[in-house]
Amino acid sequence: FLRKEAKMKVLVVEDSRWSSWQEITESLKNHKEIQLSFCDLKHAANVLGNFNIDVCVIDACSGPNRQTSTAMLAGQIKKYFKGVMIAVSGIPFSRIPLLKAGCTYACSKGNLAKVIAYLASHQPSKCLAGDIFSPAA
Image (cartoon, rainbow, N blue to C red; front, side, top):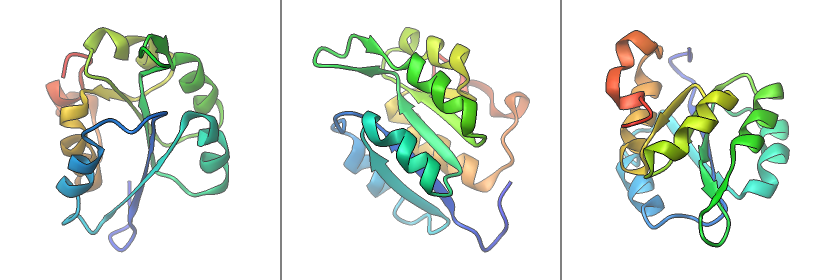
């Protein structure tokens, strides 16, 4: 999955940084093998196309009232991005369309730091991953 000396580059795609983004950054600060970056939805394709990203985290909802699914964007990204994609939302039902659109895994925002740390240290496997990567996690 990754060479020992390589950093896993993670891009978090979100149109308005949720309140826990600082918590995620803080939770992963001791994981020197992880490089965490953020961008908004409209710049995701450009960033993914121009930088060597290993994992793309996509917030499942966008818009002023968080009522617009980002499944279409996830499907577009999956056409050219061959890395791991994670759908993230505090609402389990909102993650399902992104899984159908091509996301590899899904989790809650509260579990995202754990999922990223796990991916940095393991070859992901749906059998081994268990509930941490399920739509209900």
